[in-house]
Amino acid sequence: MEIFRPQLIPDPTVRRLSLYLRELESFLSRDQKTISSKQLGDSLGLTDAQVRKDLAYFGTFGHPGVGYSVPDLLHRIRQVMGTDHTWRALLVGAGNIGRALLAYSGFGPKMLEIAAVFDADPAKIGQKLCDKPILDIAKLNEVVKANDIRLAILAVPTNAAQDVAEKVVEAGIKGILNFAPVQLCLPNTIEVQAVDLAVQLEQLAFLVSLNSMSREGVRHP
Amino acid sequence: MEIFRPQLIPDPTVRRLSLYLRELESFLSRDQKTISSKQLGDSLGLTDAQVRKDLAYFGTFGHPGVGYSVPDLLHRIRQVMGTDHTWRALLVGAGNIGRALLAYSGFGPKMLEIAAVFDADPAKIGQKLCDKPILDIAKLNEVVKANDIRLAILAVPTNAAQDVAEKVVEAGIKGILNFAPVQLCLPNTIEVQAVDLAVQLEQLAFLVSLNSMSREGVRHP
DNA sequence: GGATGTGAATGCATTCACAGCA
DNA sequence: TGCTGTGAATGCATTCACATCC
Image (cartoon, rainbow over all chains, first blue to last red; front, side, top):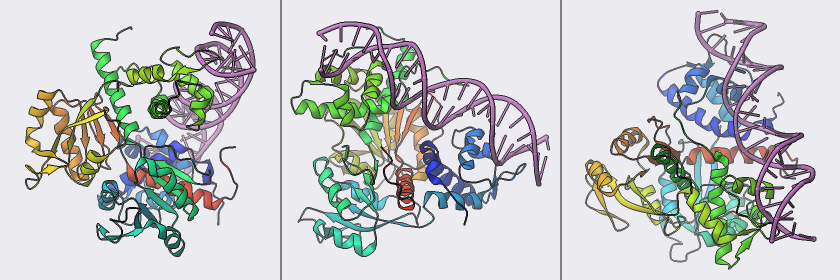
């Protein structure tokens, strides 16, 4: 088994690998068996050099004069990303965001399995969210250990987020997808991805302001 | 060919400005009137130098030996970000994501106003989503022009996204927050922010795999 | 002392350019 | 000819270090 040092893949590249996956799936579904770095780059607004550099981080398997085999490339990227198997996750927070997530179609069919749904509200416990029973958050440890779950999705109110985060970490969770707009303070062995709508909206507002200014002329206050 | 855009402030800095805003609001609500770059940085896991560089992009208003005035800093950042006033946006897609967004508390109270909700499904039109009437998507132009709306939030199925995006652009929208997992192809005068859950989940999975592979300990020494 | 603002240095990511192979 | 893989060059963002000011 060959040595593979994934820790030296730059962060921006990892983000793009997800995009490559999606695009490659789309090409494959159109029966395109081979693809060039230029074609893949164009479909995502990237240069061909960028694509080749990204792919070169984890092997050399392109064919000069031809391009890359779409199925091979898909398989290899999935392997590198750790998404060649389904990830089980638990969802904490049976509110609107939780419901939207359970119904979300953007995840590939075999990508994510919500193994359990938790909530702290006694009124919700025992009810169902999209056909999944809502469990008492007190049962967290039990469920995590029994099912070897490593990922948690936090869709709880802002003021509960830090508390719940500590609970899931204590239960053995290694990665958190956090929808609450707070900076979680956790051991650095735990990975956190923040889904931060306010940040994205503000960035959008900033860019739109910028564009309309450059058209109207810049003011000097 | 590129469009001219006076990008005075680097992109990574703009993203952090949103985080500064949130943190500053929190400090202000605890009646802290002044703050140092070190304190602000620590609360977000950034260095003091980074914070000072970021703030220096749009003025010099810190007080040596003292720090920054929290209210002044808040006001200035809001000004720069274009969030010193409320942004009106339209929401297209009255599904689960749309509902979650309307109920989302992460936006400051005066940050975003969903001015109208649209859907293409005749069964939904006329009904309400969180007390907001669902309008026929055919009325898009009319509403955008009458209310001078510049932002759109797209929470529609993947296969409808490109089509709807073109419609809202034609109606005069300048910025799009896109929840569908596709790369929108639009004129480059239109700003697009993608909320891409699959990408974030995959990145999380990758990082967790990495950690469990190598027991080399801390990544932030 | 304590903290800012900023040139200089460092570290990374992107782009360029080209050798080499089908 | 077409395309990959990769050292070299470029461009940016981050960090350092220190002059400056309260």
